Length: 232
Image 1: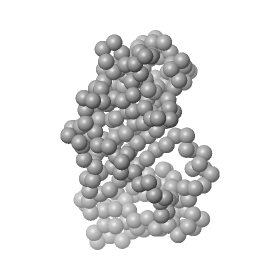
Image 2: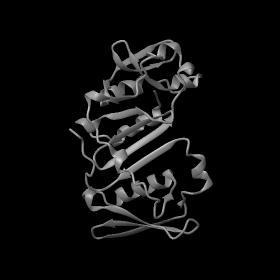
Image 3: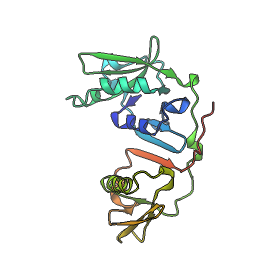
């Protein structure tokens, strides 16, 4: 299973300890690899295409007859892997990690074709992890919007500055959409403060831009309270 640096970013949604501090990596039925993490309030999943076995450098290959289909990475393993991953290797296949079945069990391997790094992993049957896939809504959404990550970051940074010193669970951003071509209004909800933002960066998710990005799928589900529990 190929694991990219982008997929390792789901670690920001993981708890600092316990079963939900780990990233779950698993093969999907359609030849992709899923990486997911949760802190109980936010669940994030990133799905990317896997690399064909024959395209993986020999030293990164595991046992072809026993392909790894699921594994977990804890914080220490993630840190080691991120440090070892080559960022700008001229060979694209060497910029990623590969989760394979080695002689001693599941391993994460990465190499710059000079130095091989192997990190032992926990097999899926040794860990517990909440199954959020059963909770994903199957119905068509009532509405759907997307917005610039740069603008969202600016909104959050500004809102945090305005509400400095307040409890995080007392503040929120309230989005109002009046159509994909209209000005969007965002209200800051906080005690004794009235603040609002206007932007025109939100678009309908059925747009051609979104359809072109479907090859790489990212899902994020969030609620204020801890709604997702470990099975342990």
